[in-house]
Length: 210
Image 1 (cartoon, helix red, strand yellow):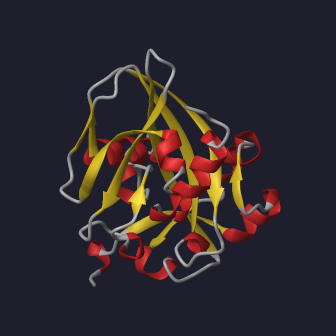
Image 2: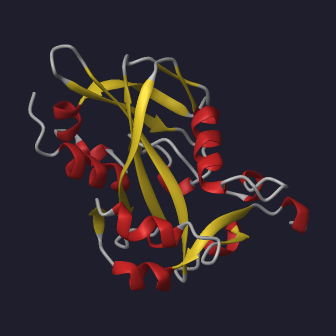
């Protein structure tokens, strides 16, 4: 593939992640990791085709969970099935609660003043879904899953968007069978979900009750 057409994605050395504090699963200690992981001193853009098979680097992925708590106190989460047209073939046909994707050079801007991670998260969200409700947002944790082939080369940063109304529409054809679903129903059906979603749901909602 010509150099100009090669997708280059944001990565950090896996060694940095280990130095900051290795974990398997979910960590809510965002303060321990984010400043260093997102520092230009440690990040670089490398060809995606190379780093997908290189566990020496972790690709940073914003993973947005869209949630809503109704007037009755019931917590629901937006969930969907990944179609076969989405980029990561190893996740096709898996169910997911995460919206997001790779940060690439297109998010870096040309003036050096943009924040690539925030730009990439916003771009991925707007490309995949239309959020028709006001919301509040906060970063709630990180995911690392070295027990799967996909997880060994990715590191997820989890953002929880709490919507005033459960109004979200898919913009991509490959976001299938989507909608808000009570968390207790999802927790009872976790085997259908990709590993990152399983990790997040257990960590964030595992103590929730109907």
